Image (cartoon, rainbow, N blue to C red; front, side, top):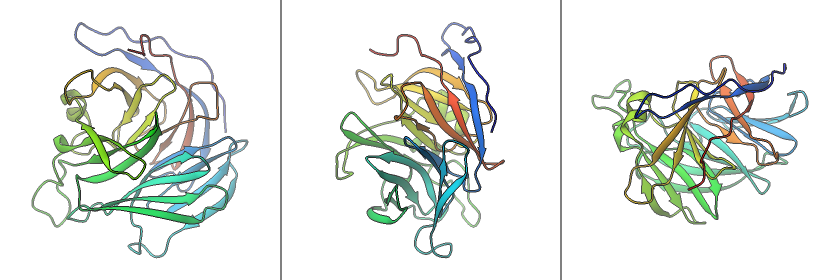
Length: 275
């Protein structure tokens, strides 16, 4: 683990461009399961791979316990992200890259890492890639991809069909929005891999590969999310992210898939964040 501090200045945007801000690295931790996403509570962070989750101490990154599913393909094959809520870990799960796409929500006790619940979407709007709780609702994304997977002849759903959704307590979709073209062009041929609501009431989205998060607002009208800023994040390579709601500071957790690293990030304030 090592520590850095404070912020670099925001890059001055050109007319019509969204502003770009710089986040700062606070700490990094080795985590063998840092392949898909991360979550955090008051004392721990949780790294997830396709079908395993490891619980780590926030103090030094040491491993506390690990949950491992059965052999690959039985029954969970692709945990896409994690979120902690009221002592439970919620994972977005899909059968990526198998066609047709199927998805589910999977739930663990955060203390024991016992798998305790599931909700199946079946064949639905795409591959469910992230889940978060905000303002009394569940939120998430059903991703689609321009990439043509091995053994397939058509794109895996087309990235443009990706949708961010608002859901009730039973995961029934209430509303859905699409992502602006500028972000779709940036994340193609992959899709929206992570998302988490910030303490400023803004939604932070990530792609699959880039070290940046896209700051979004629900529009006052229409079906396209409003893109208000981009934040560049050191060491991150897309994938699942999680705001640390146990902290009064603006702390975000993210991963670097290639290096199997979890990173703790100090995020900048986004001016005029609230409508």
